[in-house]
Length: 285
Image (cartoon, rainbow, N blue to C red; front, side, top):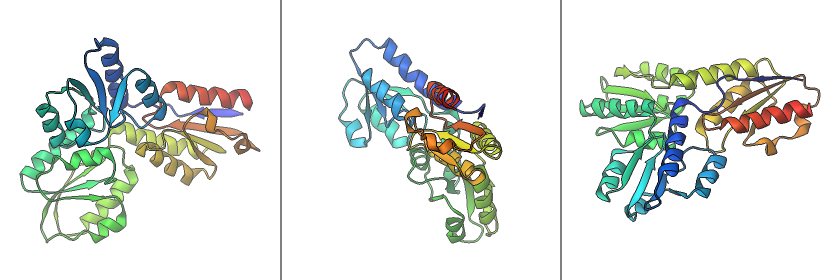
């Protein structure tokens, strides 16, 4: 059995940086302040469980933030809206900002372009925390578009000045299709492709690997947006594509009459989980 593992599988720069910051804070803490992350530091249950065992608490709402005292609050790689920073400052929290630099760049673009009066169009998932954070830096009208159909339905006055940005982990080809549809309308477009290079490379490699294997395994947390997109891309190329979180999710029946297995993983998947999956497949088959 041949096993092909995508070189780009696993932690991206932004996620690794965020996770490292949390562990660094845990290891250097004197214990006088409790450590919190605003939302899970990454969309990977195994990492979140390990951090919880080390005393890192996850909070999810502004109301919970407002109740904190003498706290260390870590902002995850997805970033947050401007009002969250203001709230953290008002409660005198120690802020550890682990926002991915590529996401920070989008915050700056949206802030500056919206202050110029441009309408902001974010291509992405409205419910994703990264997009929620980006929306919070706009001071002008803001729309989130995820599908071609939503792009077709976009109705603004002619010659509206708009700025288009993207969620960093959005599907590259879908972004281009959505932008092309918006360009058919009579707006003054300022288009910023803010999909990070690591995402584009990961998606392209996943597509290439899936096209040459009998079975494709995509590893990542169930709530990971970028892993879900990898799964969709791979499923299009290889019908026998399976979404797993850990080695325990593997079903041996998937590999009947299989000669080549492909493996890729989302940006929130630790290397040890990828190695476990790879070793399991090689030992069994």
